[in-house]
Each structure stands twice: as structure tokens, then as C-alpha cells.
Image (cartoon, rainbow, N blue to C red):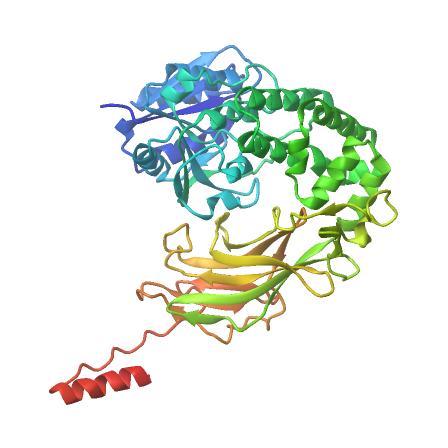
Length: 532
């Protein structure tokens, strides 16, 4: 039978943790004879080789290759791809797991969309929910900006696509080998599919705290690879939105984020080493268009960084770093045809309680004087792109499951009379479709809100309700009467959702009487139903 998917797993001293990916592979809904598993032992010195040999001896679809220790996952992954026979290749790390339907669903979507890359929904506690997985989409291209929220290789790739384009991992000890791989793969892909309705990959911390991807990063070991990533991106793209999306993400995440860390604010030698090395990458590799694509406050900070104005960078970061997100209802939540409808307003506040504001300045806006006062050029600095990365995402985080779903939300960004930046809109939670287009699984869900404006990003909760009380709108059965949902306040007054009657019950409505007699009794029946 044709092998549909080859799962490639690099292994180095995995110990008992190798059982986690193995168990997830044995539970796949895709028949075992339709996929293969390739373990590449990178010269382990523990009992990993023996564990893998025993597995291969007793499992028909498992193969094991052993190579001299290379010190990093790149070479083992390349060896796996070179020996794979599947139409698609799925990369899996030695301490992670696949969801039970991952291979079946991702492969089916790949064939349907003729995809070069399939990005499957990730759960776990190694990072927060990714807004890329709000909905399932097919046949997007590399200009789909939200792709660049996930630069790990834990995806499914068409094997011939990798071979034809000579897309391979950097081998030997290095940093950012995942990004360098995707710096070539993303731009060259014609069709990319996002799977958001099925959990595909579980990226969770080990109970000994020693995940394969953790460790202190020295500046000299890191930033040359960040520069090389930029060079690979530029070699595989033309100037424009694809190049800018990738490199703007790296300017924001890999460079500017460090200038708000405590070590930079304190001027420690370690963090100043990071700053100097990161700034050199910016000056050598990032064009003006990369900086200009940043949201306003981050763009102002980027200008300070490029001018090497360290003290001003510290002032800006210190003045907004303790800001918090705030979300409030602007009307009573109501059920409408099985959908919970909630009008809201979101804002950001500084530690002293004042709101984050902008000022009318020329034909645009000026940054809040609370942030830029006393900084040369700050009060005069203006912008027009108020909506750049300004957004609100509601997240339904299922307790004890390390997974989240994104319900539908509509919003707009506006400036209040006093200059406060507000995001106002409507949340709609449909229990039948909120799980990426599918029904929400039974469970308890805490409602989190990600608020972003001007480049400030904060996570918030809807708070202030009476402890352990159900909202006045009460519970509701879904449109098809399949599940019931109850919005309620937790013991600490935070908004949550009970799906399936775990703590709160919604009574089953009585079946209406069947009409008796002729037309007159039918009319009376309709009148009674409408009146109820």
C-alpha cells in the first residue's frame, strides 16, 4: 500500500519521554499501514537505541536509523526526509505528541487543497494560543501574514516539494534552524492549508522541565543565525509583503521584545550584548520597509534602536511595561438563536489607572505624552496607521486540556473624546461552531481576551461579576438541541462558560402539543407557540 505520510522524529537521549510520541502514533486514526515512522537516533548515549530497536522489531511501520552525534536536530531530520517514502512528511519532536486524528485529517486536507504545507492546530503549555488557528482555511499563499506567527517545523510538508526545491535543515550546532527552514519553505509554497478544527500537535512541557527546545542563549551564538535567516528570506522573495511579513515578525519578536526585558532596563552585560548584536542585524539586514510595517509604538522604538538611543529606549519601555488590558460589557449578554451575543469595549490602562491615549497631530495622531514626554522628537512624532495590529481576540481556554478556541468577534478601533484608544465590538459564541467551525467539546472554559493597540499587547479577563453566579441571560440549548451552554462567573468573579452541563444544567424544554382538529386548531396552536 502507498505510504501517505512519513513521520520523522530526531532522537537524542530521550529516555522514557520517547513513549509520548510513540503512544500518540499508535493511537492515530489513520491506519498504521498507511503511514510510516522514521526515528533517527543522533548518537544517543542512554538507552534510546535499545528502546527504538525493540519498537522497530515489533512494529511493521517503524524504521530506525542511527547516525554519529551531530549535536542538533537538523541532520537527523534531513536523514529522515532522505529515507522517507511517504507522499507527505510530518516532523515530530521526541518529547511531543500528535493528536489522534492529526495524520488522517492533515493528509486529507493536503490532498483536497493540493497543499505543499499543512499547518495543524497546536495545543500545549509551551506557548499561548495562536490566532492563526481561529478558522480552517485552504489554499492560502505565503502572503497570508498570520502564517508567520508559527515558525516551528512541526507541520506536514509535501515530500517532493522539499526535494524539488532543495529545502533542508541547517546541519550541526546552530540556532534558528527551524526559521531558516521555513524562510525557504513558506515563500516557495504555492498552496498552504491551515487546520484549526482538529488538535494536531501537542507541544507541552516535560514534567522534569527539560524540554529539548529549552536553554540559555548567548548573543554570539544566536544573532549570526538571525542574520542568516534574513538572508535566506531575501534570497527567496522579492521586495514586498511576503518578505516584509517574515522580517517584520523577527524585528518585533527577536529584536525589539528584548528591549523591554528587565535585564536591558537594568543594563546587564548579558542583555546589552543581546542589544548590540541584535541592532547590528537590523542595520545590516532590515530595510526601511520592515521598520515601517511595525505598529506605531514599536516603530517609534525601532527608530530609537536604529539611532542607538539606549536611554530613550529604556524610558519608553519603562513607561508602558506595566500597562494592563481591560474589557467590559457595553450591554447585557443575550442568547439569540442559540448564539451568545455580547457587546464589549476594550482598552489599555497604565499602572496609575489612566488609559492609553493618542493625540490629534497634523493629519494623523501623536503618541501618548505619558510615554514620549521628555524624549527628543517624541511629542512631534506622528502616525496615521492607528489600526496596525490593533485587535481583540477572545479565547475559550478549556480547563485541564491546554487547548483554546476562538469564537467569532467583530470590532472596530476608535478614539474616544479624551483620546483613549478603544476597540469596540460584539462577541458571538456559537457552541455549535466555536471550535474552529465544529462543536465545542464538553467542558469548562475560561474566557480570556487578547488586546492589542499601538503595539502594546496584553491578556485580560472579563471580571467583576458576582461570585459563582450564572449570568442573567441564563443558559441555552444550542440551535440543534445537541448541547447546552451556561455563561457564569467563577468564584473570583471572572467570566467562564460551562458546555455540556458540568456544573450547571439547562432544562430540556417540553415538547409543544401537537395540534388537534382542523385549520382553526392549527391556527390556535401557532398562536400559542408564538406567544410562548
